[in-house]
Length: 258
Ligand code: B12
Image (cartoon, rainbow, N blue to C red):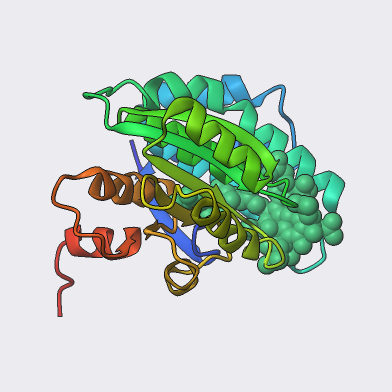
């Protein structure tokens, strides 16, 4: 089979990235990206299955297919070439593939790593990325309690108490709602709970510097490194220092050729 190259929009950086592979895999990803881009949620589950049948891993199908399709429309939205209804349809189409991938992404259950309460902060309705973070954390053996979108500090606090959580993970996608992460951390302090729960911060506009400044314990730019950061926070040798998921993934990456 011939090898082909596909140029996709990287869902994390928004930049363009090239992937190469056998023509059947590239064709399957191209189809999936097109379906998500057009918001064709009915056809996405079957196309997701087909992509897996070509030998692509669940993670490749997620990152290079479903998320890449959403990223196409996300970029158009940024340039005001796409509008809310299209973005909603695209997000729905992307999410339609998740039930197919979820059992595979969560199949490698290890021993329980910790209990996580995960939510999108008050005022913010974006749930796609947070859902992926939850799925990846479950896959790594965390018990995840997803409290949904538009979550007020008192709702986070009640859930943390109810499930005796080790970690709270907050997602924010708007520059206007990022500060709710700070407000939620303050609410934890006011409730005398800041020292009993580890705080993770994330979402596209949230940087490591912001997360550290507002008093989070950890931050990550994507779902994979979120899992890495959560594992470090749960480790017995965690020394209380701020944990950056990006720094962890850089430390793991092979040295670049010079
Ligand atoms: C889909 C979308 C919507 C959908 C949301 C549907 C849904 N069910 O989620 C709808 C149409 C509802 C929407 C509405 C709005 N949106 Co919107 N939306 C987007 C879009 C296109 C994609 C977001 C997304 O799903 N990304 C894909 C996921 C996989 O990535 P992610 O969320 O970043 O998550 C990853 C990481 O950030 C990280 N992560 C996420 N959460 C967490 C949590 C933790 C603890 C950790 C460690 C890591 C982590 O891991 C994830 C997986 O790798 C973005 C553009 C973009 N490219 O980001 C705009 C965007 C976020 N939206 C934007 C805006 C302005 C709005 C509106 C205000 C528009 C309006 N005028 O009404 C409203 C706000 C509604 C509200 N109150 O929340 C702006 C925000 C600008 C800003 N910086 O403030 C963006 C950036 C578009 C733009 N460039 O203008 N939106």
